[in-house]
Image 1 (tube, rainbow, N blue to C red):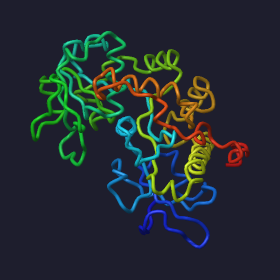
Image 2 (image 1 turned 90 degrees about the vertical axis):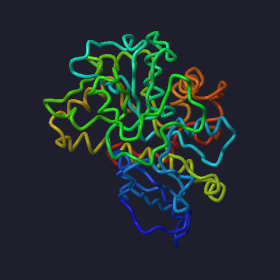
Image 3 (image 1 turned 135 degrees about the horizontal axis):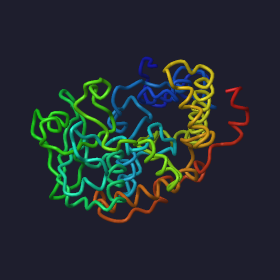
Image 4 (image 1 turned 180 degrees about the horizontal axis):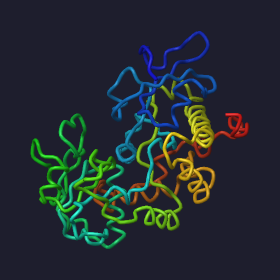
Length: 345
């Protein structure tokens, strides 16, 4: 999924080359492998183990970016990144609250006044998870929050952000981990977008707080109509200025990649024992697309996220959702580019 690094937005004989840094999400693989193209451009995808800092890498034209950090930048008037309403990472957060197997805690409301660890204070996923606690009446200022890595050896991540932390939020000491503190009983619960390895074993020390997080997530969908967005694709401003057609073309290419992935997974479903059931159930519940692209399809989710950043004190003032995706060309995915049926992409 990677190739030698040219300078950003360099041109081949036929079309400009656009380099993106993305983690290897399944639905991006058709684009990354060349099975899906982007009209007028040659897209090269660098596969990353962690989310890249797009602005800090001169060899990138764009890539995967935290929704929280992107929205905060736009709210501050920083438009060095142009966000595409294409959320390559999105997912329900009810599953992201873990406790010890012997914990008496079974509901989000029971976390009131608890000691809770989390992987990053301003992070998109943790912001959505804290929103669930707020919806259950939990006063976030009454929780003792500790911020640190899930497991030993994790480094290179900004976990605290650039703004002053609330008085009840502190960083964990060097060498401490969320896993270790939870297991030792010094934390009552942890919030993590990724699961500790031992959760996939029969003798795990940890379990999900909610006994049936799937039911809670279905109820969330029924109430909100969206699955929370966590990371999106961004492009550098100078690249967009050099290639004004790129954002809409890339958005359409990402949509085609996603559609091809869904179509192929429905055909080649034997990659996990129960994938076919998951695909069928998801289609019945969500319709043909549970992760729609385009600003209009994500307007309610974007509005809710902006409100949470302010309500939780991550950002000091209300955020106008209109600053997040201001380009009218990104309101919807270009229909002409998607006129062929699913089976043809």
